[in-house]
Image 1 (cartoon, rainbow, N blue to C red):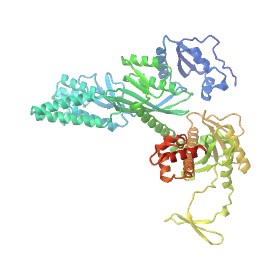
Image 2: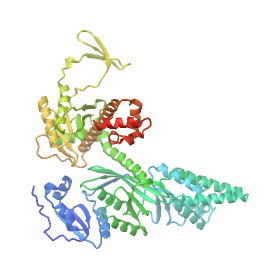
Image 3: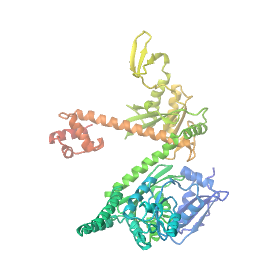
Length: 639
């Protein structure tokens, strides 16, 4: 592969102005669109030596046949042009959004003579005001049913409204008290418009004003012995409080903000968009993004905000994100032009905002896990993943049983390993194993030791295992030895099943260590590969270059899930071992019993914190005196 791309611009040809650039392939298709404050500086990164580029960036620039750019006057103009081009060309190497198109909105048709409220997924109703999105359709209908009790505005269709106005007979919702529009002959067009304005103001966050006003009116009517009006205000207040009860106050009551929680890995990201009005979460929107090029968290935030507010969506006065993009100032100006007033893009660092960001991020992490596991949980996807693996690794058959190994340690100490098992693309948790490694030189030596111990079970003679009969009622296995002795024991999962594929967490060094273990154990017939986390490369033994699976490959998702599960299981085992070790060490301190050990671990929260604590800090734990605290500190320091 040539180190210099044939379409690389000549030195000095690229301007230093802000602008937007496009990579095209030989057929003229736009592959990637990006913006830059300095076009020459940004594009020079793509034309660096190919061996230094990220694998997915290298694939993009080698697929492209040309690059072009457009200079703009300001950085804000580059934001707008980049957004327009991404929408127009849908470049395959830009981040790919996978929105759930079923999210419904609550809309108020302000452009109508008598506006109505409805549930819709159409975001292009002229002059409509939207609220949401809502995660479920029933949630929108429930909100409308509660709201029209307090603000009886029109809910009937346009055809029903026109027919009712022409005939003088109320529409069906009006006849049963579900619509308070003009067609019911109870209010005028002007009065109805006033109720619509109140409805919109309330939904936009003015709940405190309405509750105070209704309470004041109710008390005044009651004092004037106008009990009928007081009862009406009471019912309206109950309806408003019922709506508010569906959404807890998460920020100050005057806070209007959008908050974006993001979870990502090398290939994908999940976004949780919380719409907060009047301090309450009025809507939640989930988005899944597939990343083709290597993109930083700040750049990802930039792309998400451009897409979120590029289509005329209401822009709040504050937008909370996990990381500020490099062009935050230009982004704020771009958003201010859409809102007509100042917009602040900020990082949620403390207090209620930080707590809400943690909640949104947790939801995003769970959504990312669901996105990655949904494909492997489907039978068709699992079959496709195993078939893709067979073809990519050159196997004779699909690997129905895959075992993945991971090494975990804490600064070279407490070295442990994990083995997770997937059969037919699904985890077999009953066959997971963990290993303690007493002495080792490095990760490759640890991998060799663990695989030698695991592979030894494949050579266990079947005759050494007694024949067993399982009692279906009790689940007990009655085994009969050669001498006729009957042994009853719980049936255990077999550890001698032969895997079709061994997967190790790591790159070429770990794979070569595993291959050496397979040769030394006499099982070189078992297929082997490794997955390197940084670039998601798949390494085969004896190969100088990795196998690059497509980003959307079902096989890559399966390997990722195996690797992540092995890593999780290893960390769990290591934490249990560290806790057990420190408990054993503490038990050696005179005067320190089980209850005080438990109190110490609960107080400090972690073994590391306890080891680093001073005598005075240890003494703060109930039941720990100065002498005992000094003894604990001295004992831990000497270990």
